[in-house]
Image 1 (cartoon, one colour):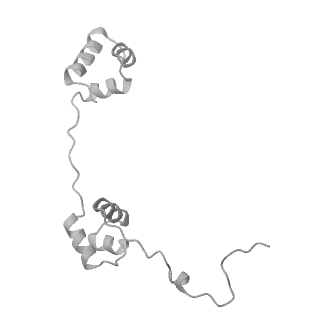
Image 2 (cartoon, rainbow, N blue to C red; image 1 turned 180 degrees about the horizontal axis):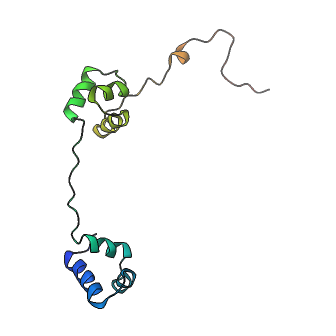
Length: 121
């Protein structure tokens, strides 16, 4: 939780009026010296803005519908972003692609006489 503007002004004015150092002021008000230092340069906190995303969610969903077997790298090239951005966007949308649990090698039949079970003697 951030400190109020009134409290910040009080800290800065006390520092100036009493000629205290940053550490002394921080100790007096039981706050961190980094906060006092930051408030000297800028008493008001910076307004936060929401980042604009490069990937349009509806366009990504259309792309997944159009190319269901495409690799993330291919999608990244189409959208002009890195592969990790595609991965994060897909994860956020809850779209995942899982391969079949049985691979082509495990589906092949084993030759007769070869057993996969361990036998004890």
